Image 1 (cartoon, rainbow, N blue to C red):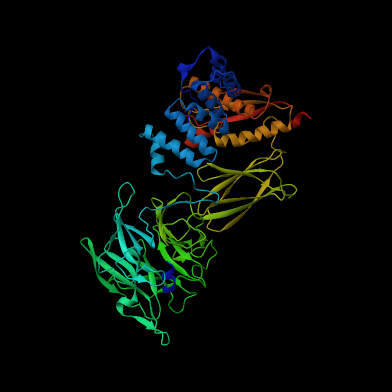
Image 2 (image 1 turned 180 degrees about the horizontal axis):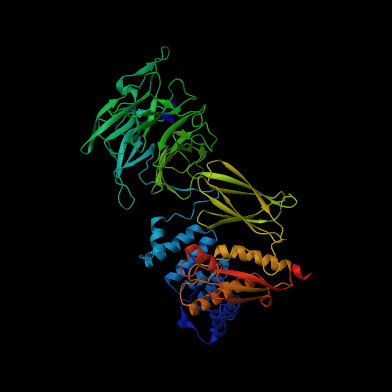
Length: 637
């Protein structure tokens, strides 16, 4: 390619293997049946330590941890249980725990298993429709897989336009051509390779002679309707060149051409009036709607050695006036190989923007016709060598990039790419301070959640109270801050296109959140007809744990209420399960069991007395837990 540079939701409590109960598990099972999950976990763990563990015990231990939201332990024991079980619901819960612990790829593997086993389940359906929903907010890192392709040769091979099952590349493999003096390889031709259903490729064949000449032809772009091919060609064929008066050396240009498809062949090659012997035009890329052509050129009036331009494609197939993309994209260096994806994202190569090697691949969003910030696409797409001719199908995340990096077969090789993570990042620069003193808070735990409520990453603030996260642009996220002695805080960080968002988080010391008779928390809401502790409930219950740690003599009674749907007797039993689950969560965080009790009140004491005319919001308000101070606390002093 160097030669052309010069030219130019949690499931309800359950047990999976009740038939495996035996005399050894009787004590543990009793705790479990009573929703005493801390004691149950301890009992099941003791069985394992004594060599009496089996698939049932592992599953029950995982369930115990699951119901008190101990995601790390639940993940561990679900994995162990699934060595001898294929229960679909267990697989689903294991996936959820992996997700909660930030292990997105592993979670997706388990969800794929679940979806295969339960294809009609709505959770499975949702996963199949959007299997990449997890990695929406990510740390910087490897965003692509890159793999060399078997059709590369010892000669230059580059480009990658896939259309109607055929891949078009430029290659110097045609040894029937005359060698080009720059690197003693044959002149470049355009080849096509049929892509098989299994992802392999058939042998490369030359595109029709109307397209290829004895001189260079470069990468192609094909209109959305598949009927027009745009490509660049060396101007020698048109007998257009400049001749040095002293050395007699002839210098050609790269010019822009189009061809139309007739049946299965390309013909009727035509040049464009914007071609000139004074400058080159190369690497055309048609927009997804077929109305604009992007290309690289060193025509006068640019910002550097070669800039990226666009021109309207008129109804008659002619091109409008070229328009420079401006200084956000173009530099004083070289910008080449543009490609615009279906998401209006411009990819291009440049040696003018900061990169790893010479030509690196860069990316910029096109918003309302204007170019957004330019970002380096990163490794492994980019290397210390030249990386160029990037194309991608945004739907599948698959595409191609060309490179002359070490390890290739020829001077330039074509590589297949697969996107693993979103490309656009925002730096969230958080600062945590004490709301009373204004001083930075050291050692606070800050957890990042994505817009689906999935845990992404946890960090600890440093001595100046700061912590940084990298998230995807245009996606809302959430930060949770926890530190003993302070009220836990959750804040939403709105979707942003900026490269940096500064966020100040005020932590309130635990002071006036204890009333004279009860702990004042946000309501502990439960999902309809369920009793397990959700992530939202755990966040609020952690505040209660902090208060009880601050006042070691405080004794609490947890009261659980239901809405009025269902029989009163059933609701009373449901509220009792919720109260016990709430108590077990608090005990699991280190609070002595003698300091907290739970009682179910059923539907007898509604928060909203709406009778038979309750809205869904009314029902949710009535499904709650309250925390009554039995003794101790600040009022006892």
